[in-house]
Amino acid sequence: MKKQRPVNLDLSTISMPATAKASILHRISGVALFFALSFVIWAWSESLSSPQGFEFVKSLFTGFIAKFIAWGAVIALLYHLVAGVRHLLMDMGRFEELDSGNASAKFVIALWVVLAVLAGVWIW
Image 1 (tube, rainbow, N blue to C red):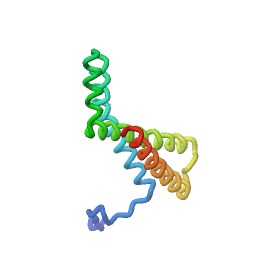
Image 2: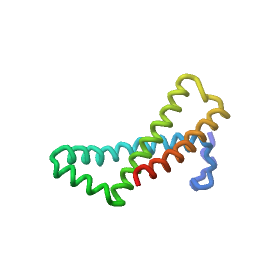
Image 3: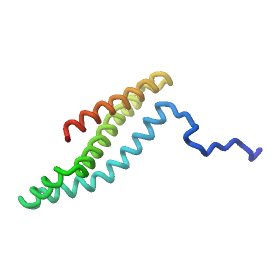
Image 4: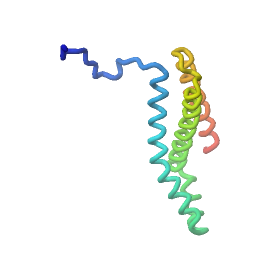
């Protein structure tokens, strides 16, 4: 077997289909949820510890950084949820063909963008 084969290390030149982008975003959103969970658990714990803790967490959420972190956690959850429903449908035999798979991936990404904007409006 010949060991020489083409090597393309410049990822910006590779054109990925929508299904690959949706899959990568699903994995990224899962990792983001894992890390966002620590912030959410801390905020819940602090807010339930005492009335002063609740007021402290409430005052934190008036700042831009806390709202941005909350928005990031919400949009990660939204994407993971929407893409997870797509994967469940694929497990039932839907969207397994190339055309329908690409269309469903584009729909999931577009729906997520709309939901992310709505979440931003809701948080701010």
